[in-house]
Length: 227
Length: 345
Image (tube, rainbow over all chains, first blue to last red; front, side, top):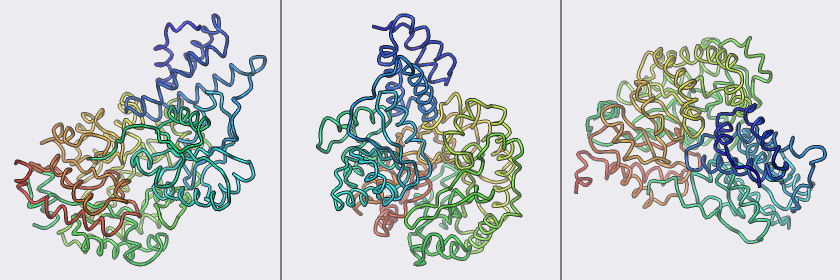
């Protein structure tokens, strides 16, 4: 069990994007616990809390991004060399930003998933539906994390899912991004397998999707309307 | 009342004849003219005619000169990527090397064809308005535009890790923004909407905002020679509301993520509110849902003026149907007539 004293300090260092301070904090914890324990009991909980803070409106997206970048590099450093561990065994996973050219959301989710031990192929951003299908075939992808920024890209997921079915490709699609957060019925409309509301949620949703082949929601209460 | 009188009365925190309706319709003009979005935006005459038809069709209380945000990177030679059913996107960031910021200079509005085209739109709508319909011009804030100039991730890193280069970038962008806003006012814009999505607490923390985006807004807005509205484009504003109020803007564009009634209470008599219909839900509203939501929104923020009904993002998605837009307009005419007696019952 790692010494959890000062957890709030680490959390605050991440929120302030204090990379040197965060590295120093982790280095000190390594004196009393192995790297994997430090990752599981300090880094992952802090990242999770930060992701959930964004969902609650108490943490900004810039803070989430900087924290995820710092943690991703910390985890890579902790698991390098003799501490190297095998990534989690999963079906082939890929991540992509459909149509849009802004990939911040994808990058944050990638960093969170890496910090949790997941590995995935990054298809990049700005891909068309046809390009995503080709990439899925090429990599044998079974779970696709898909980020969008604007409504027309989100609606294009419906076309993608239909074409997966027509091509007999069994791909479970997890969607995320502003259109889905602001319209909590959209993920089901486009035929996604699940949606995630933030990067922490993406980790939990991915775990559930791996465990269950059925369609699911995040079970997050509906928000974002006037009703 | 003309639309201009209606809007001005609301901005003065008085009750006009009806809640002003400011539908931020952009790409719908292409539908009206039966052309692609790219073709529509290629000529000023298209946009003028599109806005004319949309204003008439939905009894809209404004003309909106906004075409696409990426025009501000197109002005620097950046790529714009058009699609058939959504807003044009900015392509590869124009600043690839962070050190290039040192040599970056603001473009001059008079020398940039895409900006001149928008000024022609503004002049045309100003003529069309003849003082009866407000013409809303748009600038992207110097603090937010680097998301397109530089890329989101690298810009966030710049803000946190390279304060001197960040300040240099702001100097360049502020110079351009002030010139661009004032050129639109000179061309006939009634007011300037200062889009600043990155300043929302959804995007950066309040502490960081006070050290960055707030100071930028303070410097820029004080140099814009006309009325201004600040819009955080769907982002939350409540945690920075006091700061926004200090900026002296005539209205604030507010998010559907926040309690409109609470925002109204906090802003009453200080600044008007613009919002907050959820554009991302609007595309699949039924007419009945549209009416119910417009009614509920007016009930929260309409009484005593100081409120303009609009979407919460500053651009209504292309997918929102004519039927829905008509339902919204009809609902405003049905439920938005002052003195809003029904809200008191």
